Length: 323
Image (cartoon, rainbow, N blue to C red):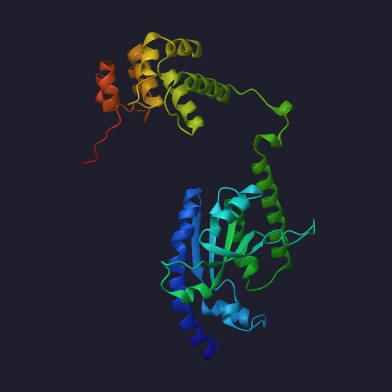
């Protein structure tokens, strides 16, 4: 049962915390989305506050730093310069009171130990409710792997109905595994020595094709080079064109013309080039494949009569279904 005095105090505080949440959320959500991450926040329930207060570690509710708490989940956990950049970004809107990380130095101990900030709002002419300046809050910043581990162990360890040595042991072991995987992913290909590299035709072909396209194309190129390679190799397969013939086609007179057409993307220009060179093969092979279609745009038709002749049954349909 929650004491009535605590419940009454919480009711007043929760109203202000909701206003605080509405002020903080848009700022941190925008940052998370810029970093291709996710954002969430919550106001602690009165039951959870009672569980904390009854332990005797707080004199007043305002001393509890995570009554309002937020979490940013990023593709990888920030370290080194990434932490400094994050702190600088946060400092534009918040006062940074404390940064907590690596709170255990024991090499045999693996605990919940993600990056934490203790923050408060900075004053601003746009902040009408100055009472919100009195509140500090906790921001957790973690990777998707760390977030998954925290979610998976939350009910069995942190809020377990019955504490268990075995559950704590499993949580520590899996936390160690998460830390090891994080380090491996952060190392990238340098985790393996150069002599461990292997030849693999599928990857080698895509890398070679992308290399030729980047050398040929005079406009912008997509960030996802792997997907560009998958697209290009698939198109060459449809055109029955070997890699050697592909390189010669890029440097043909028509290829030299298309590389400067700014109304087209590199994928569109490349597809125009292949269709003009191997129209019959491409139409025949696209039809043979299940769920295979060509994206023919008006910009492509404007520079190539061949594109206008691509049959409707192998084209991507732009009109909504049923229109």
